[in-house]
Image 1 (cartoon, rainbow, N blue to C red):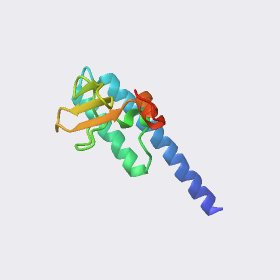
Image 2: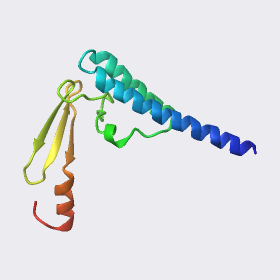
Image 3: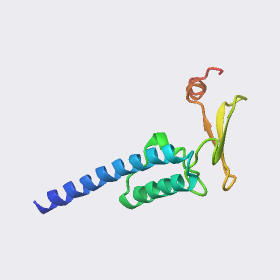
Length: 119
């Protein structure tokens, strides 16, 4: 009986943490144009909640965190986003705080390369 209650509390805490992370990241997107420092604080708080509660950040926002300095990236404000369509098409994201460059492949071309077709 005690184990069940403990497990239910733990699952409830994780669900609340997940909801809070999404709320904070949406608020960060809304306030990025007016107050960038407040938006960065929202992103930092969301990341801390994620670490403390062992809840992963949703995949639609995961790419928005810099891999080296761990700040929330806002395209056009704190990051430069470029597309490259050379031999292996990819998106290049450069953090303006630390200068780190992150490359992500296009999904369609990635699937074609796996199948052995030319993009």
